[in-house]
Length: 279
Image (cartoon, rainbow, N blue to C red):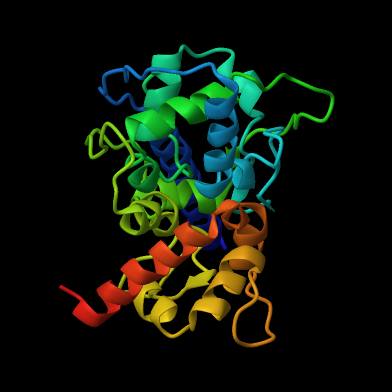
């Protein structure tokens, strides 16, 4: 009996040690600083630029993750994983200069130097300077309101384990891979800044939640005729009747802002990549 008690005591001690390591280690990951310079971006103030910034904010999914009017929302809520709740844009942006906001979007680095963990800086970092300035111009028109979400992101045991092991990686990205102006090859550009937030060109994968499946982008796009691909991008309706889940939401809330020419350019680029195959 005494050995059983001792065994249980040792087990309890090991569990407590694991919990301490889990929470202390994951907290260090969350708070760790990243040395990335602020980003100097020219921000226009004219109505046309602001309107284009609002359209671009749909395409690159700012208005999908942070809600249509930037009021913030809860995307994931699970007691074991945690809560993913992108904050209200106006409230967040009011605390940041234009340069700090540009760094947050492009490099995934907050004002205090810590990293974001769900903003896809690997794709947002490719937004051209002129387009990023327009997005920030639109952001500056937003005002806090009564519909703003009060929920903030937090992590439960599974979420903290994923943070500690790097399975849920920091999005801080010091590389500057943007251009000064929107490239002429708009198909490649929009795939880089929007589609690759979730997909890879030639590999199937899963989202950060570890369960949402995403197909390889190039062969999938090449399998659609132009009319069906345009319908997919605007409505989220694929060639079958099944619910495409996240893609349907993204298409209706974000990709529906693409022009006909932009959708055609995206598919043309992806068809070309499918023909080339993995490299």
